[in-house]
Each structure stands twice: as structure tokens, then as C-alpha cells.
Length: 283
Image 1 (cartoon, rainbow, N blue to C red):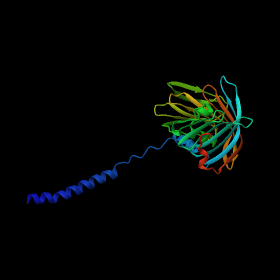
Image 2: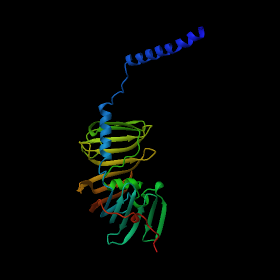
Image 3: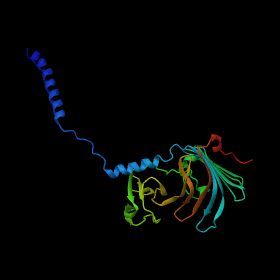
Image 4: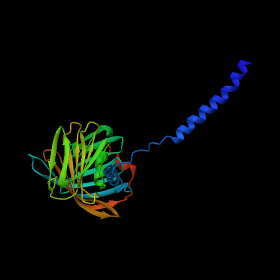
């Protein structure tokens, strides 16, 4: 009989315990998630704006003049033509001012091809490990070059971001505090600087924006050691089919070597065949 009573009381005890626990849960104050501060929201909004610039521009073509400049070498001028398809397909042809082919380079997303027309040389290597250094003497990735020519800012994977204005730009780099005022980028322009960093605080990118935090006039890209890899200056922009695309670009590395590109013609939303991004050895 004792065993029967024990088994009868057990469900009642469980019911009381469950009810009491539920009541405590209801009465206990709920801890709401801490809302993000306005500064964090502003940084996220700025990055979102940059990522959405010309987002619908998938294919485009262009022709223009290019001038290479070296720290110790004489400037070399030529003509350039390109066709691209986002995110990582591109073909670029360089020729002399007189129109003679010099170099052709292409990437179909899997392979990077290069032909030296003057020497008849042909190169092919995986696109994932390649940059356009051989063509431009600048270590710019293929997909980044597509973004730049499309009027977009390459946004690499980052762990933290800081947004400051030129008049009171203060941030830490490699253990040192850097403070600049009245035009932190040396351009004398007012605006903002968006700094993207990796996990341990190493600077990945610096993006220089106007006062509205919408238009970019310069981007600085850094390598794994924190050294400047190259900078891109959007010197002039133009409106094509509702897109804001480059009219004049300046790209250089830490010693000032690089090139500037003046765009003559630009075709947005161009019809592009995938075969154009594959090069074959010259006959």
C-alpha cells in the first residue's frame, strides 16, 4: 500500500515542480539584447551603401588611354581596352599608341591567361593564386580590378571597422597612434575614412569618402604585413546608364609606381560571350 501511495504522489509532485518552475520563468525579468550604439549602426550603414554601389552592373566594356609611371623608369603611354563580367571574369588588351598589340591578359574565373604579343610568349596559371601584377606592376587581384573598373569598392572579409572624419582622424596602427587634422588624406577634402581591420587590429583597407559617406575618392589596400599594397584614386567619375563609373583612375603602389587610366568610351550592361575570357597560345 505504501508503494501505491508513493506512485500516486509522484505525478502530483512533478506537476507542482513544473508549474512552479514555469511561474518563476514568467516572473523573472527577461534580459533583452543590448541595442547597437549609433556609431556601430552608422558604420554598418556605410559599408552596406558601398556594397550596393552599381550592384546590378554585371557586364561592361571600355577603351581608353593608359600611362605607366615608374619611380626610376620613363613613363610609357599606350591604349587599353577591356571587357568584364562580375565577379571575376575580365579581359584586357594593351597596345601601343600607334595601335600595335603589346599584351593581352584574361581570366575566366578559373585560369589567368597572358600573351606577350611582341615575344610570342603564353602564360596560364590558376586564377585563385594570381594577381594582375605582371600586367600593371601592381598586386591587384582580378576580382578587385573588375570591381574598380565597375566603379565599386572591393570589400574584403574583415573583423572590425572604424569610421572617422578627416578633421579628427585618430586610429592605432602597428602599435602607434596616428593623428591627422584638416584633410587627413592630404587632399584637403572634408569627408570620412572607413578603416577595415583584421582580428588582431591589422589594417586591411582604408576607404576615403565624401561628406555624405556615399562617394569614394580613394581606397588604400594593405597586405598581410600591414604594408600598403596599392592605392586607387577615383579622380573623375561619369554617369553611364544610371551607373556611376570611372572616367579617370590612378592606381599606384607604396613607391609611387603605377598607372593612370583615362576612359574614352564605356559601355554598361554590354553583351558578353564567356569565350572572350579564354586565351589560347599564339600560332
